[in-house]
Amino acid sequence: MASGFYSTMSFEAPRIVITGIGLTAPNGNSLAEYRQNLLDGVSGVQPFEVRYMGKSLAGVCDFDPLKYQKRKEVRVGTRAGSISIYCAREAVAHSGIDWENQARDRVGVYVGTTEHGNVETENEIYAISKFDYDTKYWSHYHNPRTVANNPAGEVSLNLGITGPAYAIGAACAAGNLGLIHATQMLRLGEVDFALCGGVSESIHTFGIFAGFKSQGALASHADPTKASRPFDRDRNGIVVSEGGALYTLERLEDAQRRGATIYGEIAGYRVNSDASDYVLPNPTRQAECVRQALKSAGMTPSDIHIVNTHATATPQGDIQECGALRDVFGQNCPDTHINNTKSFIGHAMGAAGALELAGNLPSFEDLTVHPTINVDNLDPQCDIPGLVLNTPVKAKKVDTILNNSFGMLGINSTLIVKRFTA
Amino acid sequence: MTKEDTQQVVLDIIADVAPDEDLTNVKPDVRLRDQLELDSMDFLDIVMELRKRHNIEVPEADYPQLASLDSCAEYLTPKFEALGK
Image (cartoon, rainbow over all chains, first blue to last red; front, top):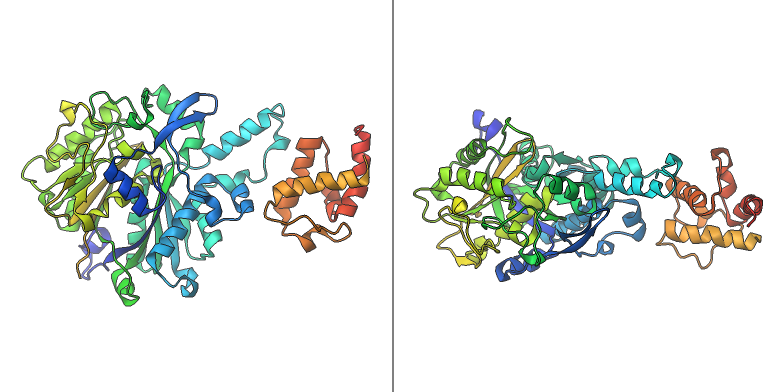
């Protein structure tokens, strides 16, 4: 139970629970819709036009921003802001909290992002290109749109939250980091109610597509729904996606006092760094991250029933992660299932960890593990025990989910959520 | 270009800048901010759109001239005429 700071203290860390989830994914705008599509094998990847590059593929969300924003807010704000507001509003509603009487200065907003500002900067440069690059045509909204805290700040404006609201920059580990940071802030008593997770507007920047293309890491396939194929021998890279998932986290005693439905409990976590390369992952550090998260949860590998992998379908990255997982879970873990959500929705960058955890949380209820789809020929180097491929499986028990999210510059995160038992 | 034309140009811009606003009964002699939800950033938008769409510059010292549709027409119509519009 105790982790980090609290493991050195003489008192028990407050228990932190999940009480609400709001999301938009390329294949669903609510947890129920998203989950059903994960069980039904429905991909959210589609053809997508990218500025300067032409036809590409992407995971595209179709939520209605006007459900929670005025048209002017949409015009002035950012796509990441709209995604964040949609997810935050949905999460608050899902939590059942009496929002009108919630002290807004005791609410924290912690939004994980891989990057922010590229979309808006590219848009402005494109706009002034029509005026011979004369900067007097540069928008006065550029700075508020591109500050790193923009997505969280837009949530604070929309919901009237006066507590701390900021972004957590952690490359593609950011979704997990949002939850981890919120857990820490709740335990420190900085806030009483946290909105946390991750978002991504990345499909609206050509730079991320062009960067992956130059790196030889951008997926292509004649059938868009088959383009994201982690662990498959013929995988050829990442499908870039947008989306978001924000959770409401509370201290257990607060959640119980108001009679909240509890969807899971934060059991443990770890964040570490490879310190070895800008881009290439490091399986030794990944395995360390997983083991240290297990230690913080007071668990052993065989206690984990679902491992949701980070695997992005790059040739090397998948092998590296499978090596790390084989190292930790390769033996004596008969009840451990291993899956991958990116095969359905692509890589939602800063949202990835949060969305992928959400896709698995309903397993506590239905005891079903969603598969990794698009594995026609399993890469022998990715063949690790427990892989759930192409069709869902019923599990004997699902009491724990371990969620991996890794990112560039060698940031690794592992978050463990367990079934809530009083 | 008549003053009415100028007022319509400004209204067309406001329709994009403040898309939630009902512009059917905007009173030309009343300050825009007194009858519409417009903030200082929105006025910067109006200035920017005049520049982008019509090549008209409004120096900062002249921003008060954009207070109402009537004052916009008074101030902007000669600028449109100077551009041959």
